[in-house]
Image 1 (cartoon, rainbow, N blue to C red):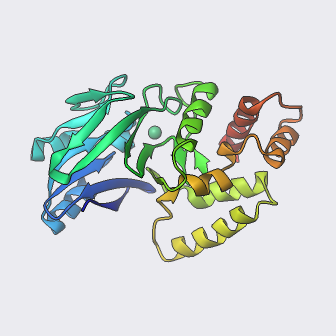
Image 2 (image 1 turned 90 degrees about the horizontal axis):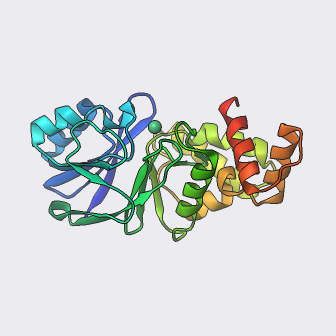
Length: 254
Ligand SMILES: [Zn+2]
């Protein structure tokens, strides 16, 4: 039985650890120290590192961990990843026999140009692309690529668990409520998330179903979302991509 644990790192990152009673794999270990503490406390050996993209807060622990455990490092073929041994891209499968876990690789460019996600049955590790009630900034790719990547993730089954790499949910909900004040599910999500954070717990994972009902970046075709974006932009918006771009730019300065 493979379980998933959240290891908080830096201010608001999560390093996800998939493992059993003996072995573990880490997704986006930006910092080695908190992960090493965790592995030691549980007596676990690290058997693989999976990286979604090249940013330092996702790959910063790679070399130290590789030195200690000699583990393979899977990462996006289109990016430079410290210590990468297995470059992968969309359609590839990563199999980790020690923890009986298979991951399908998905190409989801936008935040960075080679960003990938790992999908293991109903668990999605999507780095900085889809967040709880939000999405990552578009740094290297185009708005069109980012929107397409988000639509690809939104087309996964509703029960898919979304393991993103940051705890941004409350701030994202504040923005989402500005965009869509009449969405009751969003209001409820906000109340629940606040209560969870007061207890110091992660609001992640969420589900694709919940994101589709509350995340404005997956709701560009909804009238209230499009109208808010248009009002904020001060012009009529042509299509969903135009709405998405307006929302992303608005959120950057929110
Ligand atoms: Zn990033």
